[in-house]
Length: 275
Image 1 (tube, rainbow, N blue to C red):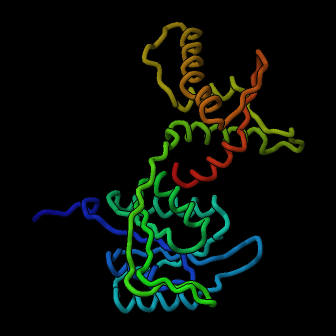
Image 2: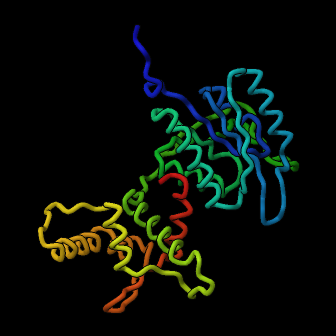
């Protein structure tokens, strides 16, 4: 008897954001049934608003359960205005589902939710190689109560321009810098305006964590250390500072300090759950 490898079975995961829509949410799911449907509902932290269209959420769920009894529907509240939070939540789903089945197909409906959820869904699709769809109809009715899509639903897959994702090694190094800075200041009562780690201490830490390996082993410890410094500098720290702008390095000749820039902090938030 042959045992099937679960990773060889293509599983479909569908993601959509609740809004005043029914067919634009339901049609692509019925057209290409997934095993799981992550269905986000709005929860705007800045204003305290909750989803105003829960009637559509319940209606859509009811129809889907009637048509697809085995479909697992997972509701998650989400701040439709918080770009970073949306990316983080999408990254958590991607990480979880790909850990369960590396061949699963993740489909995001960018025609639902808000403009910010659409932007974040497109970005997530490019970053983590997911499919994105947009749904429109043959009969669009801009009524006073709000526009509605009727008639036949047309599902398209926009071609996204490829996004150059930072190398995983760069993100891992940035996380090590973040953790080292946190460790340095965790028991301090007074803090500087900008937290930092000394470059020499960071390089020691990266050597300790075996982040980069030397192709040639030097018998002389001083030469071996100098080679490590040069390789880490050229392969990691210079790209992180000069190419990506995730860190800044002070100009002192000795005891250089490394800071995480605002751009670096945003990247850490985006990749918080994936690396």
